[in-house]
Image (cartoon, rainbow, N blue to C red; front, side, top):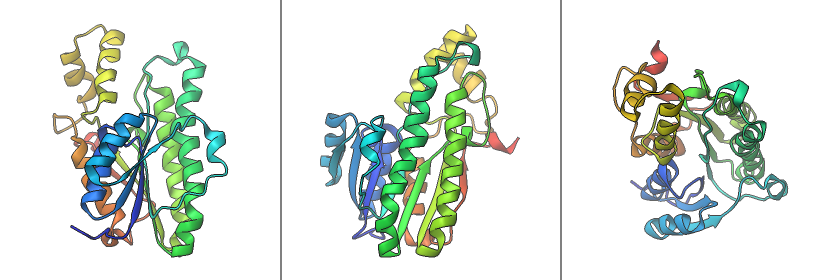
Length: 248
């Protein structure tokens, strides 16, 4: 597939998990990909594999993003973290950290990328949201808040960019087989006082009609399509990939 030949892409959190899968998918479609991650070694490893470029960056340093000129055709906002805790015990510093990485940084990257996209009359913003951008779960107040905010950012970007050739969409997976989810399983086991196997069955997948985790490559396949020409009329949308969770 070469439908993205000649296009450039930036994928945040691209050193592992969904981000690495997205970087590989976009490169396979012909894009030149910059793998953005605080993990410089991991980013370089992915970049070498796909013939792209590593962009070592700390997205918590939002001040450095305020004057950024981001020249890219495709922006995939993927970087994320998670903290699992009841609201009454939730560390305010941890709340602010999640909002900074998963709301403020994507806003600043979109803000930095849009001028060049407008100049070319083409741009694709793909935000890796979550079913938690549409639904809520207990003990995830910061993550759910951030993903709901990302949905709003995506829709405003779609409205402002539509007339200038820029689309903006969210991809909303359920639980994906990534290190982030694997770490959550241990946290959930501790909170609920059950085994990790029980967490997967009784907590993570209890509302899913399909009882398995989403694979990173499945998410990346949808991201690749949204970045291409066939998705030119798709904007302001949220694509669930949650095994039927949100059908309830």
